[in-house]
Image (tube, rainbow, N blue to C red; front, side):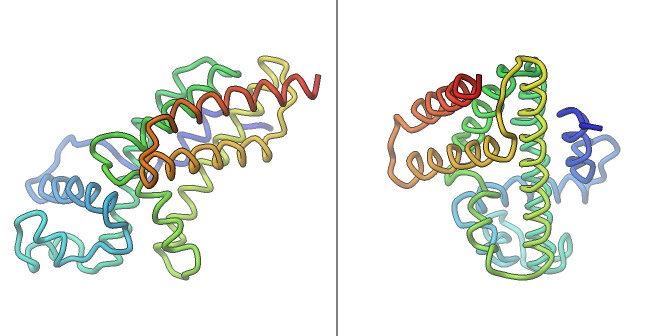
Length: 219
């Protein structure tokens, strides 16, 4: 039985608990550290994060920050999970608010692009950038990153299947998900590296045209 987009998004974010109720002082400090780490990871990359470097950014001692994570690997895993939690609130949930169908496909790309341009991410998406750093490596950091990105891609495919059912489209889910990722990454590079301010608008237009073209070509 085909899962709904809502079911997939609920599943992929089970480990990303955004609740702050009952947080102790230690938990609040950890949350503040991760807030700084998100910005550093956007600029430097998750692979470049270190206990010492982040301690300096936070104005903490190395031993004090190390007490919250214990190792560079644990820090990187925490940063990935935090980024995934924020992705849920800034991209997945707003996209889910759009009605299923072509409108949701457009909402996914709209919020996804906005995510990469948010002021809290001056260097762009931490997860996509990390994919290029860890794709040739082995270990739990790569595995965690791969899991989050794969699950988002699966959610995107589900939204395509829903669009086919709701709006009588003829989109191939795997192909359309690949188009979505390619469109997103192209604008990410053009906006951040090439400083092309027209990239986001062009990406949305390309995505809208691609969806319409596939629909018409298959009719």
